[in-house]
Image (cartoon, rainbow, N blue to C red; front, side, top):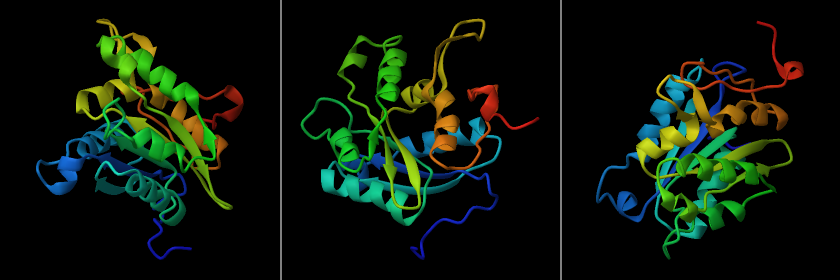
Length: 207
């Protein structure tokens, strides 16, 4: 076991790896905005504050894959969220780096993310975001590619609501807690004012 492995403060604390993929941010040309946006959203969405590990890396496939492996295999993260590098440009290779470390693909996440984004921009069809499971002998984690812009991150995770606050398209995070249950992770609960986690009745803990 790695000496760097994260240790839960509580059995149900979520261990999260946040990876920002950007040549310019990794060089220090500008301050990364993706990781702060992810942390803010998760802190507001979850009833118990997660523990985070963060990295900012360049658009290099081997570097991205190595960071994902570190998060899961060495640090023991339950959930890894990436931001950036999912478009059609030549340097956008986050999906390829993610698929390279996958045990299972989870195509529904990518499909839903594009449905959400299509409510705002027609160029959502250019997004190549993927989600996967990475498994080791003793551990598994869900890895999800997210957009690079803070506003799009919040929309993708939380979904689309109408003027009355009713959900039009569910955000992808609604499915994350149950997915983490199924792969052996902690029991994650959410604040309904931000997002409502869906679980079958048989998988819910008594109130």
